[in-house]
Structure formats: structure tokens, C-alpha cells
Length: 290
Image 1 (cartoon, rainbow, N blue to C red):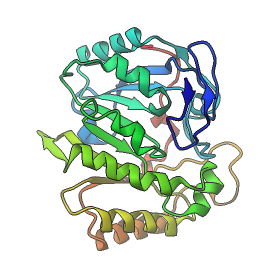
Image 2 (image 1 turned 30 degrees about the vertical axis):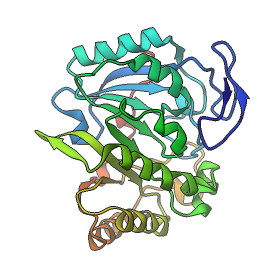
Image 3 (image 1 turned 60 degrees about the horizontal axis):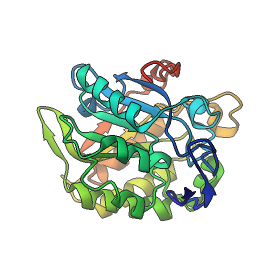
Image 4 (image 1 turned 90 degrees about the horizontal axis):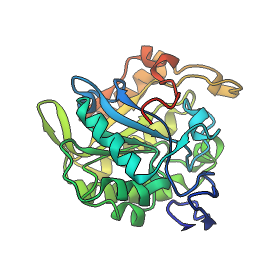
């Protein structure tokens, strides 16, 4: 595979045995954990948890990433499409409220193979960093019921500084429109999200203007009832963090972000207690379930 799946457009050769490109991964999926995950939004968790598969590698280089061992350091186990399909069934059998695919973009072809033509009994969730190509997303139409993208940045400065992706919003904006085109307005059933787009945004310390720009985009692009929006406060300083990233988000920063969101009419979704900024919410990437 000469890879052009994501906006990096590496054109790297990626085969089952050869890793390459910005994500540094082979064509075959590599995963670090499969589990019932309790710390997604309530509409995805249900009674027993989201059936989550944490894939290895990423097309971003977020210096604040809480999943660095798998996103940037290569921790994970190669698996076949057949094994991935088995994992999906195992999670469903355990009572998963959804099949939650975390950072899946660079493994799109094999994930599609694993999903096959089966009508899965729970929604398939595409849980990505938002740095996506609309043409890649179009390949997922009919296979994915819920899109769970980050919208990390609407300003190029912090996108370049923190994630080495100055053009992040140039791609994420159109990607969100494609996701919404596929799903339409969100649909809830007994408190669970069955179809739709749930946009996540993590407020970073000292970056309130970026958060306001993200909220502005959501408010002018989508009508009430179109999408869900999750404003997260869980930023946790990582080892070696510098500048504002050495501290947590303050009460005043998060309160200002919530007030701005409400004033802009973005009220469908979730806010977070500041106590959510704990490392314990990051699972152990110990290859269990894989």
C-alpha cells in the first residue's frame, strides 16, 4: 500500500511486514488493548461499557497526549483482520454498548475488511483525532453509525505548536461535514447514541481563544439537534511539559469556556467536572483482549 489515507499524504509504502509513514505503522492493524471502557461519554457506555479497541500509531504528534505509549512509541500487537473481527464479537458478547475504534484512520482498509457486510447489533464508533480526509471517510459510509472526532483546533498556531499539524482545521472542518452528511442529526435511544456525530474538544491551559474559535465553528455550522458537543476539562500535564502545559486548566478557564458555549447556543452534549483530569482514566495498555 502506498498510503494516502490521511492528510499527511506520506505516500509511504506500508505492507503487512513493513511499517512506514508518519504513523510508523504497517498495513496490518496493531492494537494495544481491547476492553469494556467506562470513561467515554455516557451515551456510549451504557451499563457495561463501550467495546473499545485501542489501535497503535497516530497521524498527529500531540505533545500532551495521554496515550503516548501507543500513539507515539509503538506499543501494540499486530493482528489480522480475522482476529479483529473476533475481537468485535467478543466485545459484543461481553455486553458492549458499541464497538469503539480508537485512532483507527491509518488502518481503515483492514478495519473495513473486519467489519465486513455484517449488521452489527451495536453502533460502530469511529473515534478519531479529527485530522481526516473526507475521501477516506466516504469509504466508511454505511459501516460506521457514530463518529466521535476530536476538534482540537480551529487556529493554526496551537495546531502547529502542539500537534505538528498547522493545517489541522483545513482538514478537520470538511471532515466533520462529511461525517454529518453520512449520519444526519444524532439519534438517541434509551439514553444511548445510536447514530450521529459527537464532537469532542479538550480545553488546553492558556488556549481559551482556540476553544472559542472551535465553538464558533460548531455554532455557525450546525443547528441545535444536529450534533452533540463534548467540552472536556481532563487535560493532564505530561512528563516534560513546558509553558502553560505544565499546569491543569483553571476553574476560571473552564467556566469561561462553558459560558461561551452556552451563549453561542451549543447546548446539546456534555461538560466535564475538573476532577476528570486524572491519569487513572487512562487504561493500562497491556495487550489484554488483543
